[in-house]
Image (tube, rainbow, N blue to C red; front, side, top):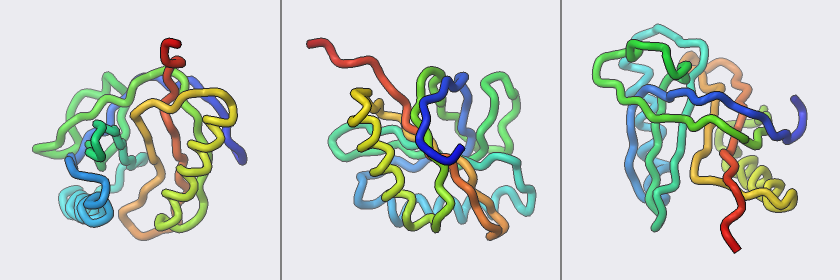
Length: 151
């Protein structure tokens, strides 16, 4: 995958730590949640770490930083973890190989592409590919698509 594409994703869960905040506070609170998650996992490194963002409106967001699991995966990866549903359906996605500080720029490019295609972005954004060990990261950024609003 080198370019933006539309894919079908099955429903899944991001199980981890929740962050409820206004947009301007996410830059501080989300990295703190990742640090807390690293301490909680204590050296265990799940295969797929992810961040799910849900736009709640009025500049408020619900983020979950944690482990991406199949919907029927069962047990939470650590005590106190919460699960956030990643809805199944059509998603636009693109790889991101740059530094994490430029992820917002890549999401911006993805959102512009969605609009150019006549598609409609939904409130869910998914970012997979995080590593707790500081190793090189290849992220896949995805935005859930929704049906066109009624005319």
